[in-house]
Length: 186
Image (cartoon, rainbow, N blue to C red; front, top):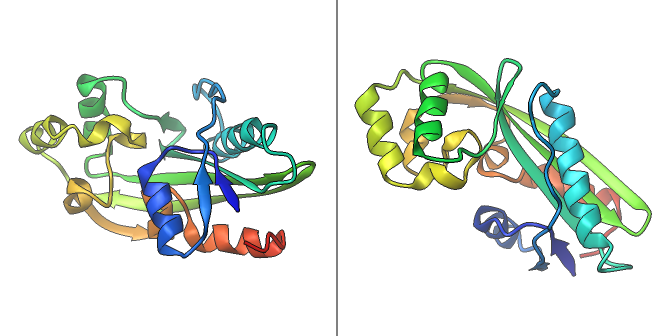
């Protein structure tokens, strides 16, 4: 059985949707600071760290780690620390194109399979009232870039280029390809 090194309800929902049997054991990996890092590399390093942290407790088991970040230009937007940070992130994304990167790592003992998926997302222009109303819902608090495409922020998105499930938090097609490549037999 696959072990998901994440407590994310969105990742659990996506794995269930794909019919993948799994159990959850959130990682205790301490994430690095994202300041001045390459977004793609940063997401990959975090995913590997999370997967290896949990894999150490489960020898002989496949562990899936993932890390999703939002980047606008060279600036990585993680999860907001408070409502003021969430509003500032949304204001920065308003009317702009940004990238969502998810690093995925599949680990079993010394075996490691990784993939980083990028999806480009375009937001329509948001006014201050829309941002304040969205922040007041509490939805942005646990999400990279302070929004959830599968929630109330769906109306902010003009278009995407790439994997929708990547923006939700787990690029499902690519995860299935990794599982197949690793012959995980789940």
